[in-house]
Length: 259
Image (cartoon, helix red, strand yellow):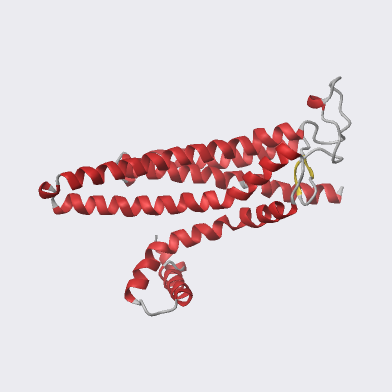
């Protein structure tokens, strides 16, 4: 019983990570609304709660459903959605509809329904939304170049700001793709060959937990660029940590409490 509880606890947080994937979709939607649609903070506030509810509901809903269906079991290298014992006959894939699984029958279907299908959908959605942002900014820039002599300083400033925001959006999406590249390749290889290549498994185990680190790099990037402009001779690693220290001081407990 203890092992079941410990395994379910680990799998709970693994499956709940689906919410972070949905937050990437929310971030892409935010950039479209701000850059393409020209929404301001007041407009964003109208849909912000909905984006939070959607992201959290995916993680919490699939997690609680998996617990109720006893889907959380050992899957080799950790605990997640899986049938127990490993290699048992699932009823959906059985000629007579029977199962030899003691727990988590049809877990392979639930893996797709609760995890891989939503992730693939988010990847396609984010790719499409970011292409929309890129196309919008590129089209606007071409129009500006065509009418260079009629552009006001305010319009040029607006375009520059949109390009900076679009660049930041692309960086966030890049970190998302970097995180899920190896898990996607691993799953594809597993489906085609039925094997679990250790190198891909290792890369998958490393890449998924460090998405937060990638996002930190992206978050710090604008201030890091400014810091480097003021300190061009400082070694880039030292510059990064010096800038990070400045940001921590800036957004310290007192500052956050004031907000």
